Amino acid sequence: IIARDIYGQDKIVRAIAYLTMGYSLGPIFTPPIGGFLVETSGWRSVLILALAAGIFIVVLVYFLIDETQPENNLNNNQNNCHRSLFSDYYLLFRDIKFTSLTFQIGLSTGAFFALATGAAFIMIEHLGRPASEYGLYFTLLPCGYLLGNFVSGRLGSQISIETMVLISTGIMVVAICSFAVFTLWGNISPLVLFGFGSVLTFGQGMNTPFAQSGLLRVPSNLIGTAGGIGAFAQMFGAAVFSQLYGFAADGTPSNLAIIVGAATFLAFVFATINFCKRPFKLPQPT
Image (cartoon, rainbow, N blue to C red; front, side, top):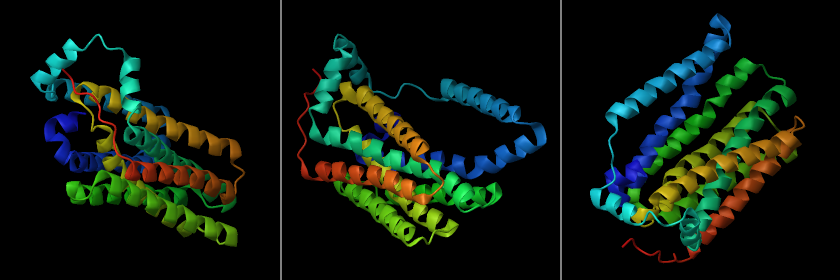
């Protein structure tokens, strides 16, 4: 929402892409840092570091980030404060493109997190590899996501949101189908798991900035609700599919391919709906 206020709808894809590149750096650098802290100072030191980092971020936000919403939008929101939350939901979900993007970003995020959850089981239980080797291979997943963010940032508004969401989800489908083929052949190795996994996260990294910016193509008085729905969809999808794999996990890659594949194919269905349908014209604030 802050990115849209500052950069506008035309540049929001590029802004979100570069912002999420920073988000993807965490899974690359924090595992070795956490491992070092656990070995030298015990597991509580990880929590202390997280607390200190959180306090530092709150202080930075308080002193450096001002209100970014234009004054006229603030006045409009105050004039429309009598609207109920459920009426905002009703207005937003009447738009088939908003609804399809909400499900698409939730399902694609679910596929990403189910893969990240299952990769540890496959490496350690099925392949019998040490945790240290898993940590090295795991960096391929956030690196793929980082590269996808970079590509989205370079493309910016040159390609429509609908087209890019469909293409990026298609890349995810190709990745999980390729992994499923190798699973059926019984030819599973760390390179197969994380190689195709990095292709899937590359597609997810391309998808996220475009899908998020698409969810914010709403009147200014609905941006906060739309942003909250998008964030909830991502976290809910991640939790549901990670938990599904937890229930189904048996140490083999078959269930991982099925669950990630189901989430990815459903995401592609909603991406197709978003590509084909015309938006419902939402009422503008008065």
